[in-house]
Amino acid sequence: MIVVLLILHGLLAVALLGAITHQALSVLAAPAAKSRWTFVTRFRSVNGPAYATPIVLLFSVTALGGALLYPQYRIDVRPALEDLQNSAANGVFEIKEHLVAIGLGLLPAYWLFWQQPLAANTAAPRRYLTWLLAFFVWWGFLAGHVLNNIKGLLP
Amino acid sequence: MNGPRLKIFSIVFGVFYIVAFYFDLALFRYYPAVREFHWMRTDGIGVVILWYGWIATSALASAAIAFAVPGKMAERLWPGWVWIVPTAVVVVMLIYERRWFV
Image (cartoon, rainbow over all chains, first blue to last red; front, side, top):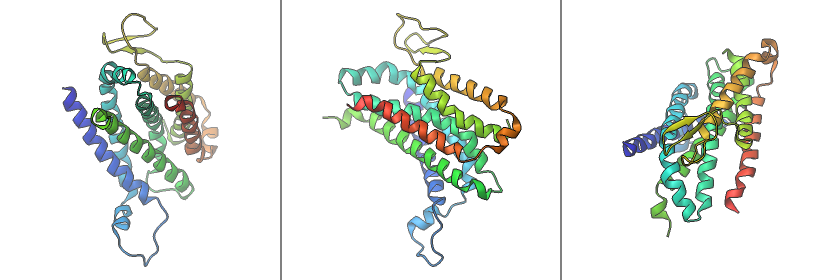
């Protein structure tokens, strides 16, 4: 059961990572009108507002999955890392749990600022909130994968 | 909760979370070894998870503040605080958590 939940959590995280990265790049300054149609310009040419509600749902459900997995981590993984005196790995995870919690608190304002019609005076907060959430998601994703695979990564 | 109140919730949530974390103000505690929730610290039943309790504390406190702030004051609030305050909270948290890497 825990393995199924871990895989599901990882898959939801992949979807969230893709969605928030698309949206985070979409709020960069617009490319020049005659710029080349590259992979990057295609990647960022998404309808940002359409991503907001799915991102709120994905963030919430992924965080819930992480919360359900957390007891197993606390009982099995963290003590093992402490035995190995690998405090950096525990620190990376500790930061992840703080970022996820702070991210959950940001979701109401993030969702509000992405509601149509997009107000011009909220463009900057909308952009920075999106980048903050993107940072949280990237940190959570990388920290989760490193810790999940840490036995194979450590000498 | 309407728009301005959602903004206030998001602004203060991170602050309450970091205060709850630093001062150990978890609304409740979960003991995974025995699969029990406790209001108070309970020794002798294994490791404790405070994270759920910190989130609950900050959610309740933030909702209370969001409802308590007068509507007109909430509407006048500069939208920039919505990202500046959480960013400051993250910076403070990262500085504090350097303890794991020394």
